[in-house]
Amino acid sequence: MKNKIERTKTKAFWQHLVTLIILGLAVHLLLPQITTLENSWKILSKMLFWAVGLAFIAQTISYIGSGFLLQNTLELVNQPVPLYRSTLVVLGAASVALVAGGTVGSSAAIFKWTSNEKGSVVGATLASLFPSLFTSLMLVVFSFFGVIHLFLVHDLTKTQIIGFSITLAFLSAVIILSFLASHYRERASSVIQWFGQTFAKLRHQPFNPDLIQNEVDIIFFAWDELWKGKWLHLFLGAFINVSFDMLTLYCVFFATGDHISLGVLLSGYALPLILGRLAFFLPGGVGVIESSMAALYTGLGIPNATAVVVILGYRLISFWIPSILGFPIAAYLQNSNNR
Image (cartoon, rainbow, N blue to C red):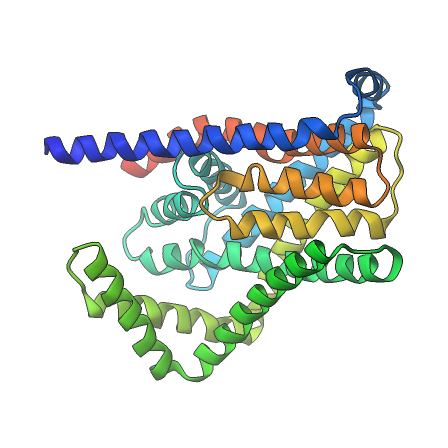
């Protein structure tokens, strides 16, 4: 028991240390982008605060879109959940991701808070996987148009071309493998069983093949339900989430007086968020998103000071404030789950 407590404390220590290091790197990478503190202060002092208010409204709708996506995921297995409840789960999971393992911690929290009723484990499994998957797919669609704009209008460095190509190739491979797995289900089940057994051996834990197979059957069942037309609702939720999140970024740009085009907005928006999702162990892609956004927008002609003020403002509205608000929500969900 004592060893277990010590391991838990050690794990928590390293999680907090990694978070602090990433935050430090984010500051280190972003601060050099500011030409002078005077210019940044001028931008802040002249910001249109009504546009900032619109950014908050857009971000609220974005989170409601996430809640709608989660709600419709649960409805795949006839598990009705009110929209306000599913939106609270998304907000609470965002705060868990901040302190407990990024996307992994967030998915675990969603699973726990959506499996508080008898017989709802199937829905909870899907809820911990599908919303993130569909949001990532929507980001790929948005990033595709952004990359086209970058190729047609602006010069790309070799590093950017290589980085974007690897990112899109990886996500395309995931999509292709998903379709192949759904078509060759027995072979896919065997591969998943092998990975599960290998992972269990590495962690020196018992392996339950029936449990793994049950989870695989759940995924295949949900896949079949999606192709009956229910995928439209999930894509709608993902579209609301991503499009209004991008609108948040545009409103912050507008507030600074920089009225950028849709092509420039797309070029610097989706790809950094995809990179942040690939760094799944980082909470909210901290450091990765900010630095890559700054590099893209300054490369597209946005003044350094404006880019940094906008990116930090956008991240404050879209990530930090919702994550902080999510802590009391997470406590509420945990208490209601225990009851």
